[in-house]
Image (cartoon, rainbow, N blue to C red):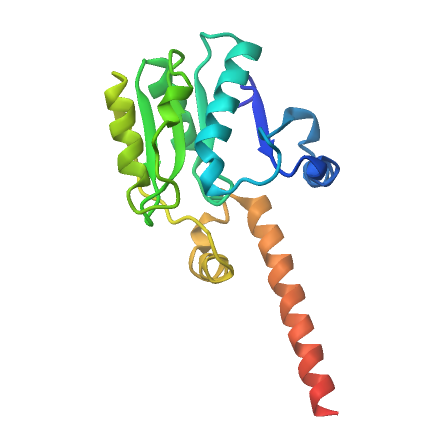
Amino acid sequence: QLQKTNKILVYAPSNSKPDLRKILAADGVDSSWQLSPAIGSVSLGSSNLSLILGDALERNRKAFGEGSCQTFIGMDCPHLKLSDVVSGFECAASGRAMILPANDGGYVMLSLPAETTAEAFDGIFWSSEKTCQMQIERLKSLGIDTVVGDTYTDLDTPRDIESFYENSKHFEEDCPLTFEVLRKCFEATEEADGEGMATENL
């Protein structure tokens, strides 16, 4: 369902491209992703997000044509369902936006119709409990109706990741690669903890 889409990973800092290529290659998806450095290429900090997202949107409009819809997906929601991504594409193609809220007040996905410009991100307070609502209101001020989809839990802290892994096994079928990475990480952590305890007991 996503084979005909252009998939672009906006990244920072600019020197992280080789590492990202290795990660994509390890999952066998290197050839299907384009890497695009974020404007400024220093960090993806919340204070820069309006500039970063607006720049990415305009660059994509130039690269793929002003008739192209765009969907922005955060990296902190690996359990995002494919069906929701497809719904976002369909909304955008019909001239509406679609947003998936996060339970902390932000959002994990935003699909935008082709006529949307960088102005869509102006004045948004990022990393705020009001971020999602502000985005909806901003789009409304530009004459863009927004469909609000399901609310997701995003993963911002190590504890969030641990809780997600422990309590969301039903997502394993939808996100097998993500769960395999998490499983290996937690197994390695448990082994390291076990070695530390053995050393302390000597």
